[in-house]
Image 1 (tube, rainbow, N blue to C red):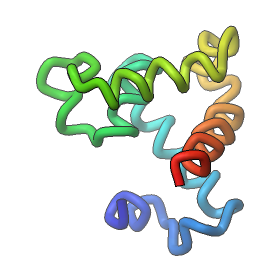
Image 2 (cartoon, rainbow, N blue to C red; image 1 turned 90 degrees about the horizontal axis):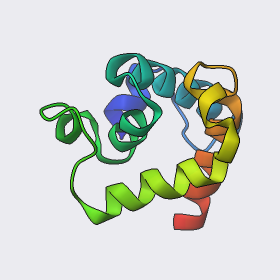
Image 3 (cartoon, rainbow, N blue to C red; image 1 turned 30 degrees about the horizontal axis):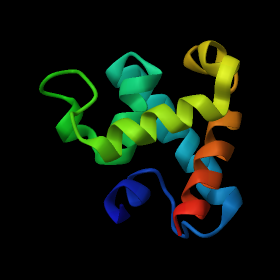
Length: 102
């Protein structure tokens, strides 16, 4: 979203170096805000508003599939990622997922 990109200083979302840094900061903030990789991914996919009230993954098939698919991509690295150890891996996977969606 343009406003989210601007809030993280991302002028050109198509510049990989710029985008990876901004997305890493965004995911870090979402993990802190929501307290789990699953909720952070749901908020990344759908925005924070649908995930906030119930503090759960919203009951929409698209969001649930996105969270499941993305966690499957990182496999056993999920626990490390949740602690911030492999945030770069997560960002690369999210970028690959976004490219596939285009």
